[in-house]
Length: 494
Image (cartoon, rainbow, N blue to C red):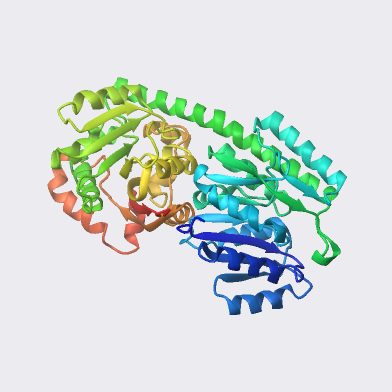
């Protein structure tokens, strides 16, 4: 068995008084070493499920009982359970309460967990077994999968079985997209990981229809059908956005910054102003504090532009190992010419949504005003992929609470005047902290920073800089700072 695994099991339970004690006892007896927690979500039950669950959780601390008293639905229950996952877990098993005959299947799934990012329990592949499965339900299921294969080009036998073992990173990525309140949640948990690029493996499993001793199933094809149709529509939109929207956005960004390089020599007018030296020197000092615990860290600068931030870092430590990536070929050309004397610094054209690096390559990922230009969910997923478990991030991003930033990001005229790209936005520090926490980061800080506006006149910097730095320390007033510094660590997966 996979004894180093820290496993969370999610079980939705609606009127499961006949099965709940059996399934939890079997799981604890067989997988006690692997189990970190069994989260059972009582989904508005009208039988004795709640009282049985309360006794079970009192008897064994690994059993976590959650109660839902309104808005029943297996999808709602599963989402509720996933949101309560322990940060200590690195794998998640999705399971129905009546899967009492599937212990051997779970053993096989755990043994195979290293072969892929996730394991699908398949009823329909060779050696899979169906018993007491209603013919109408089977026809509906096979029809859904036929449509899924044709429309989404997803060649799997069984995506809709609530019998899946996933790395927790998959759950972190798909959870914001889960919308189904009913049984169609099982299609979402099967389809979305594939659309996000995760590798899944199918294993044959047994499925046994409910007998009277197990209680009555609440699944109704007529009620569930519209939910599955909605999942297909959402999945098609997600796939189109992934395939076209992101590509189109990145092309626009590349053209925007290439044009700025041609006309000004920089990707942002502020980089050419007298205050730029002070601003980047302070940012470099802040980054050096983040990486000081590493002996010889490998650093990725995301959206490096002409390499101006890396230049200030290298001026303070010429031996830093830095890889820079930017969507603008012209900016990369400038970076390579300007910083060619640093033998450990390399810069290349690349897409932040599809980084040209292997998994777990970097100790630290940094970026100066980059995340607000690109799809946040997808870019952060790429950062998590290329950074080592426990690695750190540092980003400097515009603060939406700053009056100028707010107007600038919401006015097409001001965007053009300030050399902004068409699609860029800005964040609040509360939003970015919540987002990073939800997506697998810990030790998160997001603090307002910097009133050093690019238009400050060079001749008065000696007087203005100390004053402006003082303002950053004034409570409440500092919430209006032009940017914020964001730091965090990627949760360790093992």
